[in-house]
Image (cartoon, rainbow, N blue to C red):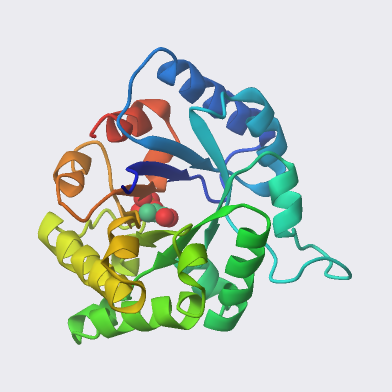
Length: 251
Ligand code: PEP
């Protein structure tokens, strides 16, 4: 059966020392605690190896926030999926709306990144979600469906089964404007049925679908109580342990 996951996305915040401090604090906070979800932290590339060597990786999975769409070679400034895997990271966040919008990531490049992540035994946390205008013109279901189809639906079922999806309505990211629990459930159920149509009900039932967009300690319980919401991808509230822990404990 699918896993519940609470994953932090630190984005481009904190230098190495600060990030390491936060990772250590979270590690301490989780020590001896039973939690009902997997915990992941998505750090900048430069933190990955140090964080992975410092935390108990059986309790905290470490994620990159991106990887290259090429295997290796003359791509100055890029970091390959193999390099990410060599740090001890087990996950990679792909297709975040900030990367799609600011770095022009396309469905095709994301497809290549997903394949390379899987080839290197990384679990992709694949982000999808509509902008406000698309929701207001009621195109949100079509947008999300085509994002999934375009980057993921050429994968064989076995490979698709290794992917975690994160529904992040762009209008809710960093805005303090969370989707209602009903809006989240409606979209998550739609995503699951889209996966079921392509790969069958068993694969769909085993796919973890996280919600992201201004999730916090106050709304996490209500969001996570929905049958198709299997956790959260958390930006701002993952940058302090006293904000992140209550979200983890919302399960
Ligand atoms: C995110 O960036 O993935 C995110 C959900 O951010 P925030 O929680 O800050 O809205």
